Length: 185
Image 1 (cartoon, rainbow, N blue to C red):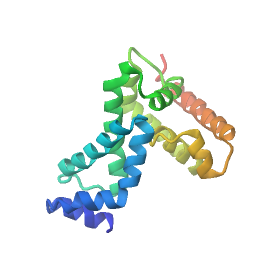
Image 2: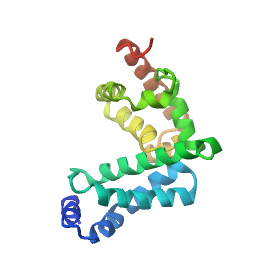
Image 3: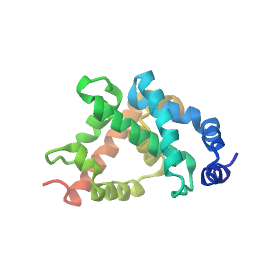
Image 4: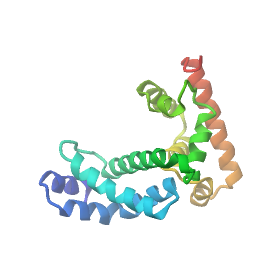
């Protein structure tokens, strides 16, 4: 079933919408939650919560891309769960990704609060628009969808070290752009 049809089911409050979403995007949702949380039970709960969040958000929202919408929901839920359990140091994968970005994103008193600020988000979006499609896709897959460098290498056929260096150059370019826009004090 196409996204528009699934969204129409949500608008009709037809519970089949959740099953159709699970059928079309279940592997993507479970994989994303699993990559971000590194704990099977937490990732399963996060995926289930994403279906409920979609049910509660549609309507009034009408996503043009159900995949992107579900990806955003899962990622936000996973980050919330990560923050809740951070003191336990259970989520090394997401911690590593945040640490990589923390090296180039300016920090005030709280890096996570800075990341969430709307203006910084807009600056990062503007920066991503300047990248080549392969570098933009690489950045988004690594830092939004949480794919490991090894997964990216497997998908692209490039060596992990080559991709790690490309990601490093993109992060340095992001840092330079953020410095130009005076996000660093």
